[in-house]
Image (cartoon, rainbow, N blue to C red; front, side):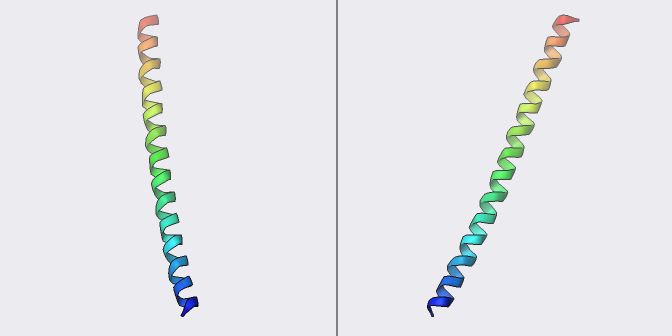
Length: 51
């Protein structure tokens, strides 16, 4: 009985961890693409000012 409860708890924790990892990765990817877009925008505006 205790082993079954432990197994259930363990599988739930693994699923939560996997979802958190997926969520964290997607948040990181969104932040990375936003910063890339911001950098591109500012670089092109600086180039436009220079040229």
